Length: 267
Length: 351
Ligand SMILES: Nc1ncnc2c1ncn2[C@@H]1O[C@H](COP(=O)(O)OP(=O)(O)O)[C@@H](O)[C@H]1O
Ligand SMILES: [Mg+2]
Image 1: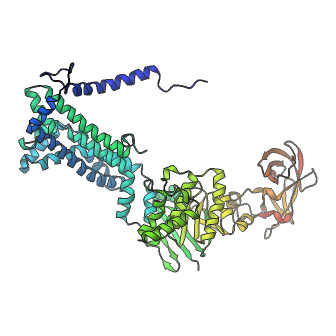
Image 2 (image 1 turned 60 degrees about the vertical axis):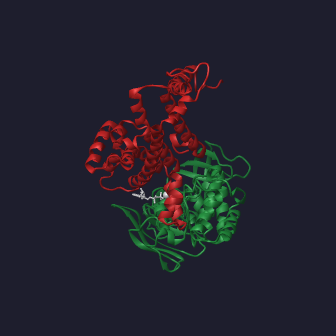
Image 3 (image 1 turned 135 degrees about the horizontal axis):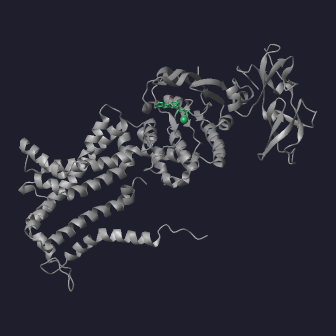
């Protein structure tokens, strides 16, 4: 008997088309970034780094890039802390309002960022809190925390509680059980959540437009502002940089934990 | 009383009692099995001893000290979980060392004790592996080493062998018992496998629906089961209904010899006899005749079901190297009256 092939030629073609469709624009924008010309064209005869240089000659772009990095890193980290605490409560305890709390924690996924942006703008104005990086980050935490919570909850529900019980009977206090057993066992969920949160915060535009001030413009907002006036290959260079940052984060996590384990679930 | 005593231990979940009024004394160094069908409250009992489940009522004392409400991390008992519950992110050595770290044992002593514990379970060579790199039997032994390394006064095992395949399970029965003998730790093992309980324990505690039904040495449990349920749960038992007459039970038109103290003449009764206590003879040579309906070869023994006028009777014969009677053959069944016992149909019944 011949073995069945899991991927027939049609399936293979389909996969190739899907991957090509997803990757093609990214590849094109990265190539365009190396053009020596003044318009968005593919470099044909020679490659140039002039548009990358141009990015770094725009201090506002550099500042926005750093803003975005900071906001994303801090929002993702705080979201992880909140999500682990909330996840433990939701997973371990049956209390009144548990379902409501779960829905509340996940609602930012359902609310359009546009609405959230307008609402936060009003709120911050009432609080007199506009224009600060702190409040911008707070907005981002609201948006990204649900992603982390999802992954943390999935990791917690797959956790073998008897390992924690074993640690307790071996003499571990609750804090030690949490730190040495629970956290390491859900670490793939935590890091995966952090990564998703970071990426989502890093390219969040719709909400940020409303709640950034001139001093706290994030990179996507800066690009948007710039692109409304002119489109030149510098946009491609910035895009290429953004792709590079995201890819670097992915690679790093893959090296440390194995990405398929994080994104597909516990291995 | 005992080294470890349970006194009226009860656990209720809402209305239902998972464990009711369990009292038991365990001597130092003893190996006790809690045996019973799934859902009868064995794990709950074990977890109350461990402190992982809070009893609804009753008392637990260890070496004269009341530990009923002591926190599990203070009891210092060793536990092996059914799933082994190894820490997946730690190596074998780190798993075993964890309990010693919690006890703030100095590094050097920790290392020696981990080595000793791993040597005890014959895993010294795998100290740096992770649990996912081990076979089921090896994981099981890591779990045992991890529980024993802290020198617990009592070792609690929850179905420790149920995840192993049959061959390995048999080997581990001997190995686990051997380890327990060498270390001398008082041990309570939960199991639903009667052969495991019989072969490993000093005493077996049979539980049914949250209650203790009988506590006895394996041999006595097998020979004198306290209830009909135990007689069929522990080993196989033929039960032939009939009427008590002087010297035996009348069933299927025959007087079947058996022991029947305390029964009134003419009372309804049940004869109970183990399959291996019955011999096959030529027709007319035994106490009742029958016809072999089915024959199973079990390797070390043959098992027959024989149709008689008193009902279906199971007969087990050791494999003596020659092929015995075939299906369809007429045979006689023989037994001595001392190996069969009669009792009231619903009541206490022994073999
Ligand atoms: N946390 C719990 N909540 C409600 N009922 C439970 C709980 N734990 C066990 N039970 C019930 O208690 C009974 C005994 O369970 P268990 O001790 O696990 O049985 P065993 O280990 O003998 O199979 C079962 O009927 C089970 O459904
Ligand atoms: Mg159980």
